[in-house]
Image 1 (cartoon, rainbow, N blue to C red):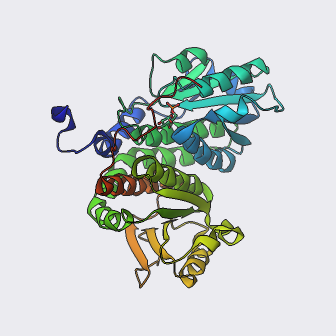
Image 2 (cartoon, rainbow, N blue to C red):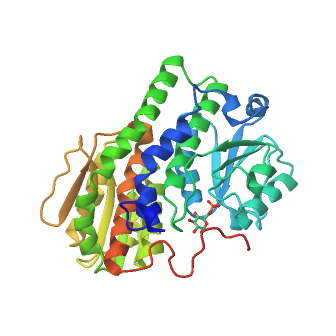
Length: 366
Ligand code: G6P
């Protein structure tokens, strides 16, 4: 009811603003990087695997897709990410030395549970879930688990569950890196420090809300939007597009910016807002030339740029300045303004934000 909402208009907005707390709670019992974070027996399991297979649906699939970049670059372990409803029905090549990771807010998504059972049936017994509900079927089904402490999530469009999943997946990455001798004490200490500072960093991003509201007024009049990101921010672009679709009913697509020229540039006109994630990372210069390609076709750019980039507002290019680049954890900061953009655009259009048409919070039937 209204009392629980406090100063917020919807559960989704409340849950977006709860993220600093949700992340802090998820990290609370983490004293350091060790296999036991994932349960008894994790030490042995992590020695018996050579690859990771992530299975999930919806927003949880996008946290898994982000983690693939971390697992391969930081832990040096091959990772594939599959949509549960596809994996369960396709012929695949099982490897018993696989860590099967399911990701689920509810722990009750029928396709994800079925995909897990399918993987186990193929002889892959090392199973781990990242889940927000301790008493769920998924936690019971998996040998190992890590519980996110997002708290109850009511808005159908997932927000705080997503960012806490990313925290859990980063911890898994560090733990697998350590098991494989790829994490020095100094690196571990630096990563832990960055994780501990994350709630404050997310808080700083939430303070950008008034600027995002100004953009949302313009977005509310659009029928299409394109989201661009590169590298580990490509799945964040996908998540931003999904959020906008789910609650504002605006058609949105995400592309890795380097792929623009292979199709989506044909859609770019002055009627097409192009939301761009611009972290100050190794791909920044490439991204800037992708943005030129959009400008040259009259596309309107809305850029979330790290403060240490030199991207500036100019005609046709609006910039919201993020804090300075946050390294490997940058996706966790960059998704937050995309959540706010979807939320405020939906509010401006007057949709049922917490219960979008045709969607359910948890899909427990196929
Ligand atoms: C539904 C929800 C999404 C969620 C997906 C997976 O589609 O509307 O917000 O991401 O299910 O749910 P899970 O509980 O498995 O993370």
